[in-house]
Length: 385
Image 1 (cartoon, rainbow, N blue to C red):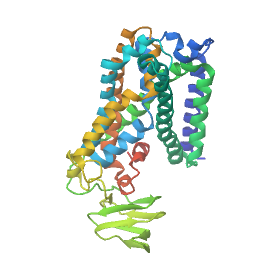
Image 2: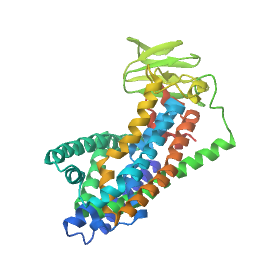
Image 3: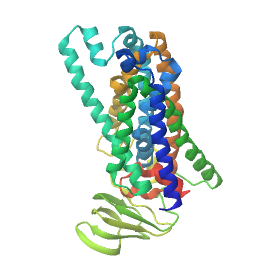
Image 4: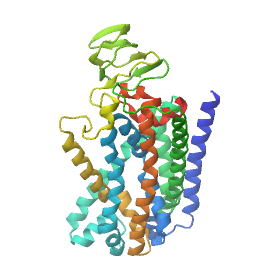
Protein backbone atom coordinates (compact mmCIF):
# COMPACT_ATOMS: atom_id res chain seq x y z
CA UNK A 1 0.00 0.00 0.00
CA UNK A 2 1.37 3.42 -0.97
CA UNK A 3 1.78 6.28 1.49
CA UNK A 4 -1.11 8.14 -0.13
CA UNK A 5 -3.43 5.15 0.16
CA UNK A 6 -2.41 4.61 3.78
CA UNK A 7 -3.26 8.23 4.60
CA UNK A 8 -6.65 7.85 2.92
CA UNK A 9 -7.38 4.70 4.94
CA UNK A 10 -6.42 6.50 8.16
CA UNK A 11 -8.59 9.51 7.27
CA UNK A 12 -11.62 7.31 6.46
CA UNK A 13 -11.12 5.33 9.68
CA UNK A 14 -10.88 8.49 11.77
CA UNK A 15 -14.00 9.97 10.15
CA UNK A 16 -16.00 6.76 10.65
CA UNK A 17 -14.92 6.11 14.24
CA UNK A 18 -15.26 9.80 15.07
CA UNK A 19 -18.81 9.92 13.73
CA UNK A 20 -19.84 6.89 15.78
CA UNK A 21 -18.09 8.23 18.91
CA UNK A 22 -19.68 11.67 18.62
CA UNK A 23 -23.08 10.10 18.09
CA UNK A 24 -22.62 7.86 21.12
CA UNK A 25 -21.59 10.86 23.22
CA UNK A 26 -24.57 12.90 22.07
CA UNK A 27 -26.97 10.04 22.64
CA UNK A 28 -25.92 9.31 26.20
CA UNK A 29 -28.85 9.48 28.58
CA UNK A 30 -31.48 8.92 25.87
CA UNK A 31 -34.11 6.86 27.66
CA UNK A 32 -37.64 7.93 26.73
CA UNK A 33 -39.58 7.90 23.46
CA UNK A 34 -39.26 11.68 23.34
CA UNK A 35 -35.47 11.40 23.70
CA UNK A 36 -35.21 8.86 20.92
CA UNK A 37 -37.58 10.44 18.38
CA UNK A 38 -37.30 14.21 18.93
CA UNK A 39 -34.37 14.65 21.38
CA UNK A 40 -36.86 15.81 24.03
CA UNK A 41 -37.54 18.91 21.87
CA UNK A 42 -34.47 20.54 23.40
CA UNK A 43 -32.23 21.37 20.42
CA UNK A 44 -31.35 25.03 19.85
CA UNK A 45 -31.72 26.76 16.48
CA UNK A 46 -28.02 26.95 15.55
CA UNK A 47 -27.12 23.40 16.46
CA UNK A 48 -30.23 22.04 14.77
CA UNK A 49 -29.44 24.08 11.65
CA UNK A 50 -25.94 22.58 11.53
CA UNK A 51 -27.44 19.10 11.98
CA UNK A 52 -29.98 19.65 9.18
CA UNK A 53 -27.24 20.99 6.90
CA UNK A 54 -24.93 18.10 7.73
CA UNK A 55 -27.68 15.62 6.93
CA UNK A 56 -28.87 17.44 3.82
CA UNK A 57 -25.40 17.84 2.31
CA UNK A 58 -25.06 14.38 0.86
CA UNK A 59 -23.12 12.74 -1.95
CA UNK A 60 -25.30 14.71 -4.38
CA UNK A 61 -23.96 17.93 -2.87
CA UNK A 62 -20.31 16.87 -2.84
CA UNK A 63 -20.05 14.96 -6.09
CA UNK A 64 -23.24 15.62 -8.00
CA UNK A 65 -23.33 19.43 -8.00
CA UNK A 66 -19.68 19.75 -9.05
CA UNK A 67 -20.13 17.09 -11.72
CA UNK A 68 -23.27 18.71 -13.13
CA UNK A 69 -21.62 22.14 -13.26
CA UNK A 70 -18.56 20.66 -14.98
CA UNK A 71 -20.74 18.88 -17.53
CA UNK A 72 -23.63 21.26 -18.20
CA UNK A 73 -22.35 24.66 -17.12
CA UNK A 74 -24.58 27.62 -16.28
CA UNK A 75 -27.90 25.75 -16.30
CA UNK A 76 -26.66 23.31 -13.66
CA UNK A 77 -26.37 26.21 -11.19
CA UNK A 78 -30.11 25.86 -10.64
CA UNK A 79 -29.39 22.71 -8.64
CA UNK A 80 -27.61 24.38 -5.69
CA UNK A 81 -29.88 27.43 -5.96
CA UNK A 82 -32.99 25.27 -5.82
CA UNK A 83 -31.64 23.08 -3.02
CA UNK A 84 -31.05 26.15 -0.88
CA UNK A 85 -34.14 28.13 -1.89
CA UNK A 86 -36.36 25.25 -0.83
CA UNK A 87 -35.62 26.14 2.77
CA UNK A 88 -37.25 29.52 2.19
CA UNK A 89 -40.51 27.64 1.70
CA UNK A 90 -39.84 25.69 4.88
CA UNK A 91 -39.18 28.95 6.72
CA UNK A 92 -42.37 30.62 5.52
CA UNK A 93 -44.90 27.80 5.51
CA UNK A 94 -43.73 24.65 7.30
CA UNK A 95 -41.27 25.00 10.19
CA UNK A 96 -43.43 26.62 12.87
CA UNK A 97 -46.66 24.64 12.21
CA UNK A 98 -44.69 21.38 12.34
CA UNK A 99 -43.19 22.23 15.71
CA UNK A 100 -46.45 23.54 17.19
CA UNK A 101 -48.29 20.35 16.24
CA UNK A 102 -46.48 18.36 18.94
CA UNK A 103 -46.16 15.40 16.55
CA UNK A 104 -43.26 12.96 16.57
CA UNK A 105 -43.21 11.98 12.88
CA UNK A 106 -44.49 13.17 9.50
CA UNK A 107 -47.35 10.61 9.47
CA UNK A 108 -48.30 11.85 12.96
CA UNK A 109 -48.51 15.38 11.58
CA UNK A 110 -50.59 14.28 8.57
CA UNK A 111 -53.14 12.61 10.85
CA UNK A 112 -53.12 15.61 13.22
CA UNK A 113 -53.81 18.20 10.50
CA UNK A 114 -56.20 16.16 8.34
CA UNK A 115 -57.88 14.06 11.00
CA UNK A 116 -57.58 10.99 8.81
CA UNK A 117 -56.02 7.61 9.54
CA UNK A 118 -55.89 6.99 5.79
CA UNK A 119 -53.77 10.12 5.36
CA UNK A 120 -51.40 8.77 7.99
CA UNK A 121 -51.01 5.49 6.11
CA UNK A 122 -50.38 7.27 2.81
CA UNK A 123 -47.78 9.47 4.52
CA UNK A 124 -46.06 6.37 5.91
CA UNK A 125 -45.71 4.87 2.42
CA UNK A 126 -44.46 8.16 0.96
CA UNK A 127 -41.89 8.61 3.75
CA UNK A 128 -40.44 5.14 3.19
CA UNK A 129 -40.37 5.62 -0.60
CA UNK A 130 -38.67 9.03 -0.40
CA UNK A 131 -36.10 7.80 2.11
CA UNK A 132 -35.18 4.79 -0.05
CA UNK A 133 -34.81 6.91 -3.19
CA UNK A 134 -32.78 9.51 -1.27
CA UNK A 135 -30.54 6.91 0.35
CA UNK A 136 -29.53 5.13 -2.86
CA UNK A 137 -27.35 7.93 -4.34
CA UNK A 138 -25.68 8.43 -0.94
CA UNK A 139 -24.62 4.80 -0.83
CA UNK A 140 -23.58 4.94 -4.48
CA UNK A 141 -21.47 8.01 -3.69
CA UNK A 142 -19.79 6.18 -0.80
CA UNK A 143 -18.95 3.26 -3.07
CA UNK A 144 -17.67 5.57 -5.83
CA UNK A 145 -15.46 7.49 -3.41
CA UNK A 146 -13.67 4.43 -2.02
CA UNK A 147 -13.42 2.91 -5.49
CA UNK A 148 -11.62 5.96 -6.89
CA UNK A 149 -9.45 6.67 -3.85
CA UNK A 150 -8.51 3.10 -2.89
CA UNK A 151 -9.65 0.89 -5.76
CA UNK A 152 -12.03 -1.02 -3.47
CA UNK A 153 -15.27 -2.60 -4.74
CA UNK A 154 -18.29 -0.32 -4.50
CA UNK A 155 -20.04 -2.50 -1.92
CA UNK A 156 -17.30 -1.77 0.65
CA UNK A 157 -18.32 1.89 0.85
CA UNK A 158 -21.98 0.92 1.06
CA UNK A 159 -21.35 -1.44 3.99
CA UNK A 160 -19.06 1.02 5.80
CA UNK A 161 -21.44 3.97 5.59
CA UNK A 162 -24.52 1.87 6.23
CA UNK A 163 -22.94 0.28 9.30
CA UNK A 164 -21.90 3.62 10.80
CA UNK A 165 -25.40 5.00 10.17
CA UNK A 166 -27.12 2.07 11.87
CA UNK A 167 -24.84 2.23 14.91
CA UNK A 168 -25.44 5.97 15.28
CA UNK A 169 -29.22 5.71 15.09
CA UNK A 170 -29.52 2.69 17.37
CA UNK A 171 -27.16 4.12 20.00
CA UNK A 172 -29.22 7.19 20.82
CA UNK A 173 -31.86 8.01 18.23
CA UNK A 174 -32.44 11.64 17.27
CA UNK A 175 -30.20 13.03 19.99
CA UNK A 176 -27.27 10.90 18.79
CA UNK A 177 -27.85 11.71 15.13
CA UNK A 178 -28.19 15.44 15.87
CA UNK A 179 -24.79 15.62 17.54
CA UNK A 180 -23.11 13.58 14.81
CA UNK A 181 -24.66 15.50 11.90
CA UNK A 182 -24.00 18.88 13.50
CA UNK A 183 -20.28 18.08 13.67
CA UNK A 184 -20.37 16.56 10.19
CA UNK A 185 -21.55 19.81 8.62
CA UNK A 186 -18.37 21.56 9.69
CA UNK A 187 -16.30 18.53 8.70
CA UNK A 188 -17.90 18.48 5.25
CA UNK A 189 -17.47 22.22 4.84
CA UNK A 190 -13.77 21.92 5.68
CA UNK A 191 -13.34 18.92 3.37
CA UNK A 192 -14.77 20.79 0.38
CA UNK A 193 -13.51 24.31 1.18
CA UNK A 194 -9.81 23.51 1.65
CA UNK A 195 -9.25 21.81 -1.74
CA UNK A 196 -11.47 24.39 -3.46
CA UNK A 197 -9.41 27.28 -2.10
CA UNK A 198 -6.15 25.54 -3.03
CA UNK A 199 -7.39 24.94 -6.58
CA UNK A 200 -8.57 28.56 -6.87
CA UNK A 201 -5.15 29.84 -5.78
CA UNK A 202 -3.47 27.55 -8.30
CA UNK A 203 -5.81 28.73 -11.05
CA UNK A 204 -5.21 32.38 -10.13
CA UNK A 205 -1.47 31.88 -10.66
CA UNK A 206 -2.03 30.64 -14.24
CA UNK A 207 -5.59 31.41 -15.38
CA UNK A 208 -7.19 29.75 -18.41
CA UNK A 209 -10.07 30.80 -20.66
CA UNK A 210 -13.13 28.77 -19.68
CA UNK A 211 -15.09 30.14 -22.63
CA UNK A 212 -12.79 28.71 -25.32
CA UNK A 213 -14.68 27.97 -28.57
CA UNK A 214 -13.22 24.43 -28.55
CA UNK A 215 -13.74 21.66 -25.98
CA UNK A 216 -11.50 21.59 -22.93
CA UNK A 217 -7.99 20.25 -23.56
CA UNK A 218 -5.80 17.98 -21.46
CA UNK A 219 -2.43 19.38 -20.42
CA UNK A 220 -0.64 16.01 -20.32
CA UNK A 221 -1.04 12.67 -22.08
CA UNK A 222 -4.12 11.05 -20.55
CA UNK A 223 -5.94 7.73 -20.82
CA UNK A 224 -9.66 7.55 -20.09
CA UNK A 225 -11.24 4.22 -19.15
CA UNK A 226 -14.79 3.78 -20.46
CA UNK A 227 -16.69 1.55 -18.02
CA UNK A 228 -20.14 2.02 -19.58
CA UNK A 229 -21.06 2.43 -23.25
CA UNK A 230 -21.21 6.13 -24.08
CA UNK A 231 -21.89 8.37 -27.07
CA UNK A 232 -19.27 11.10 -27.52
CA UNK A 233 -18.72 13.92 -29.98
CA UNK A 234 -15.21 14.66 -31.25
CA UNK A 235 -14.80 18.28 -32.37
CA UNK A 236 -11.03 18.20 -32.93
CA UNK A 237 -9.62 14.71 -33.65
CA UNK A 238 -5.97 15.69 -33.36
CA UNK A 239 -4.22 13.50 -30.78
CA UNK A 240 -7.34 11.44 -29.98
CA UNK A 241 -7.05 7.64 -30.26
CA UNK A 242 -9.01 4.71 -28.94
CA UNK A 243 -8.47 1.07 -28.08
CA UNK A 244 -11.67 -0.92 -27.83
CA UNK A 245 -15.05 -0.89 -29.52
CA UNK A 246 -16.07 2.13 -31.61
CA UNK A 247 -19.42 2.11 -33.42
CA UNK A 248 -19.50 -1.69 -33.13
CA UNK A 249 -15.99 -2.19 -34.56
CA UNK A 250 -13.04 -3.41 -32.51
CA UNK A 251 -10.00 -1.12 -32.85
CA UNK A 252 -6.52 -0.92 -31.37
CA UNK A 253 -4.77 2.42 -30.87
CA UNK A 254 -6.72 3.86 -33.81
CA UNK A 255 -7.32 7.58 -34.48
CA UNK A 256 -10.82 8.76 -33.66
CA UNK A 257 -12.32 10.85 -36.45
CA UNK A 258 -14.38 14.00 -35.98
CA UNK A 259 -18.08 13.45 -35.36
CA UNK A 260 -20.24 11.44 -33.00
CA UNK A 261 -19.22 7.91 -32.01
CA UNK A 262 -20.46 5.21 -29.65
CA UNK A 263 -17.59 3.98 -27.47
CA UNK A 264 -18.13 0.51 -26.06
CA UNK A 265 -17.69 -0.70 -22.51
CA UNK A 266 -14.12 -1.50 -21.38
CA UNK A 267 -12.59 0.71 -24.07
CA UNK A 268 -9.78 3.22 -23.53
CA UNK A 269 -9.61 6.72 -25.00
CA UNK A 270 -6.03 7.94 -25.37
CA UNK A 271 -5.44 11.70 -25.43
CA UNK A 272 -2.10 13.26 -26.33
CA UNK A 273 -0.97 16.36 -24.45
CA UNK A 274 -2.98 19.34 -25.72
CA UNK A 275 -5.69 17.20 -27.33
CA UNK A 276 -9.28 18.41 -27.19
CA UNK A 277 -11.38 16.13 -24.98
CA UNK A 278 -14.26 14.24 -26.62
CA UNK A 279 -17.47 15.27 -24.87
CA UNK A 280 -20.55 13.15 -24.16
CA UNK A 281 -23.11 13.96 -26.82
CA UNK A 282 -25.83 15.33 -24.53
CA UNK A 283 -23.58 18.00 -22.96
CA UNK A 284 -22.39 21.42 -24.25
CA UNK A 285 -19.63 20.68 -26.74
CA UNK A 286 -17.51 23.82 -26.42
CA UNK A 287 -16.42 26.16 -23.68
CA UNK A 288 -18.48 28.99 -25.16
CA UNK A 289 -21.65 26.84 -25.15
CA UNK A 290 -20.90 25.71 -21.60
CA UNK A 291 -20.75 29.29 -20.27
CA UNK A 292 -24.12 30.26 -21.80
CA UNK A 293 -27.44 29.52 -20.12
CA UNK A 294 -30.39 28.07 -21.97
CA UNK A 295 -28.80 24.84 -23.18
CA UNK A 296 -30.61 22.73 -20.63
CA UNK A 297 -29.36 19.46 -19.20
CA UNK A 298 -29.09 17.23 -22.21
CA UNK A 299 -32.50 16.98 -23.87
CA UNK A 300 -34.78 18.30 -26.58
CA UNK A 301 -36.62 20.87 -24.44
CA UNK A 302 -34.02 22.84 -22.45
CA UNK A 303 -36.40 25.55 -21.20
CA UNK A 304 -38.85 23.02 -19.77
CA UNK A 305 -35.95 21.09 -18.26
CA UNK A 306 -34.71 24.13 -16.38
CA UNK A 307 -38.20 25.18 -15.24
CA UNK A 308 -39.03 21.68 -14.01
CA UNK A 309 -35.66 21.51 -12.25
CA UNK A 310 -36.34 24.79 -10.45
CA UNK A 311 -39.78 23.61 -9.37
CA UNK A 312 -38.62 20.15 -8.29
CA UNK A 313 -35.65 21.32 -6.22
CA UNK A 314 -37.62 24.12 -4.57
CA UNK A 315 -40.58 21.92 -3.64
CA UNK A 316 -38.42 18.88 -2.97
CA UNK A 317 -37.05 20.29 0.27
CA UNK A 318 -40.61 20.68 1.54
CA UNK A 319 -41.15 16.95 1.27
CA UNK A 320 -37.95 15.42 2.64
CA UNK A 321 -39.03 13.51 5.76
CA UNK A 322 -35.57 13.39 7.32
CA UNK A 323 -35.49 17.20 7.15
CA UNK A 324 -39.07 17.80 8.30
CA UNK A 325 -38.68 15.60 11.37
CA UNK A 326 -35.84 17.77 12.62
CA UNK A 327 -38.15 20.71 13.24
CA UNK A 328 -39.87 18.61 15.90
CA UNK A 329 -36.66 18.80 17.94
CA UNK A 330 -36.71 22.58 18.38
CA UNK A 331 -37.94 24.11 21.63
CA UNK A 332 -40.55 26.41 20.04
CA UNK A 333 -42.07 27.36 16.70
CA UNK A 334 -39.94 30.52 16.66
CA UNK A 335 -36.83 28.38 17.13
CA UNK A 336 -37.93 26.24 14.19
CA UNK A 337 -38.14 29.34 11.97
CA UNK A 338 -34.70 30.52 13.14
CA UNK A 339 -33.38 27.06 12.33
CA UNK A 340 -34.68 27.25 8.74
CA UNK A 341 -33.17 30.72 8.28
CA UNK A 342 -29.79 29.57 9.59
CA UNK A 343 -29.86 26.55 7.28
CA UNK A 344 -30.20 28.87 4.28
CA UNK A 345 -27.05 30.71 5.37
CA UNK A 346 -25.08 27.49 5.98
CA UNK A 347 -26.09 25.90 2.67
CA UNK A 348 -25.35 29.06 0.70
CA UNK A 349 -21.82 29.08 2.07
CA UNK A 350 -21.28 25.39 1.37
CA UNK A 351 -22.56 25.26 -2.20
CA UNK A 352 -20.13 27.93 -3.33
CA UNK A 353 -17.25 25.43 -3.11
CA UNK A 354 -18.52 22.46 -5.19
CA UNK A 355 -19.64 25.00 -7.80
CA UNK A 356 -16.10 26.39 -7.97
CA UNK A 357 -14.62 22.88 -8.18
CA UNK A 358 -17.04 22.00 -10.96
CA UNK A 359 -16.00 25.05 -12.97
CA UNK A 360 -12.28 24.41 -12.54
CA UNK A 361 -12.65 20.70 -13.29
CA UNK A 362 -12.90 21.68 -16.95
CA UNK A 363 -9.38 23.06 -16.68
CA UNK A 364 -7.66 20.36 -14.65
CA UNK A 365 -9.61 17.12 -15.28
CA UNK A 366 -11.48 17.66 -18.58
CA UNK A 367 -11.26 13.93 -19.31
CA UNK A 368 -14.31 13.35 -17.08
CA UNK A 369 -16.38 14.93 -19.87
CA UNK A 370 -15.56 12.01 -22.17
CA UNK A 371 -17.31 9.32 -20.15
CA UNK A 372 -20.24 11.06 -18.49
CA UNK A 373 -18.78 10.26 -15.05
CA UNK A 374 -18.34 13.89 -14.09
CA UNK A 375 -19.33 13.03 -10.51
CA UNK A 376 -15.73 11.89 -10.04
CA UNK A 377 -14.35 15.38 -10.77
CA UNK A 378 -14.19 16.46 -7.11
CA UNK A 379 -12.18 13.35 -6.23
CA UNK A 380 -9.78 13.70 -9.15
CA UNK A 381 -9.05 17.41 -9.22
CA UNK A 382 -6.82 17.63 -6.09
CA UNK A 383 -4.29 15.17 -7.53
CA UNK A 384 -4.36 16.95 -10.91
CA UNK A 385 -3.33 20.35 -9.54
